[in-house]
Amino acid sequence: MKKKIIKGVLLLAMAVLFLTGCSRNNVEGYVEGVLNATYKGDYAKYIHLTKCSQSEAQNLHTERIDECMKALEDLQISDDLKEQYRQFFQKELETVRFTVNGKKKEKGGYNVEVSVEPYSMFQGVDQELEQKVDKYSTEVTEEALKGTPFPDENQLREKVYELLLEILNDHMNHITYGEAETINIHVTEGKHQSYSIDGSELKKLDKKLVNLKELGLE
Image (cartoon, rainbow, N blue to C red):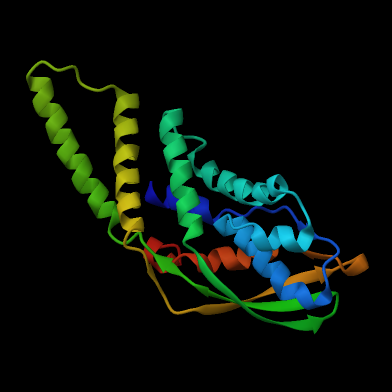
């Protein structure tokens, strides 16, 4: 259950991101602008460099959150709870830490070095959820013995995911970061000093954002 929710943040938006009319001296700024807009919802640099509209820049972040939300597609939970999870994913994305360190010219574009500090916030989530579910089960059983109707399957499912979200939000307040790791992102140079980053390049960053060992995914 936890892995299905958390893996949402690792899903890759495979669309190619384009920047046009940007000076060659701004390759690092372009990468930083794309990453800030996509993950953090900080659009200032991206808008400044691309001259795009606010709504166009916001689409990068919105689409990223939409990718995270795909983890909930098959869950039969209320729209209100899904919206709460959407807010959680948005806050989680905004916690990422990365630094653009420099660029190196290569065939077809540039190799841009980015350092990433993987974050940890999921240690013990499973155990806490199990404890909360056990407590809730006891309370429900006791109430049922007093004549209170027992929750149906949908109500029970809703409650479990409410408890999970409660734990995740609490853990976000105690997030920690690991030692920075370096990745290289290839920026393709097109005509008229235009640049683009393929979605597969962002996948490199996705894999470093979260402490995967903590999730048992590495």
